[in-house]
Length: 98
Image (cartoon, rainbow, N blue to C red):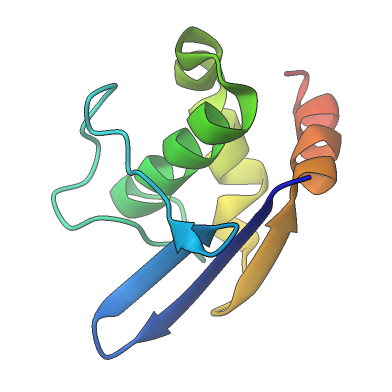
């Protein structure tokens, strides 16, 4: 099971997967010019949602089709510092019909 963690520091928003930086997956779609964000619905949270789903699912097409719903249901409600497990992402995907 993977562990995704996010927090803010002097360098800005930082997101890791199992302790390593999460790839923003700009190769799939560039939604944000400034990188990851969360706690609201917008470009930065959308980039985070896409990156989380692409990494978790290992299916780029599915991640592209689900990131907006996932952003609104999960990423927009994350606290300043947060953790998500693979199981929690799977549960959220079931809830949003993904």
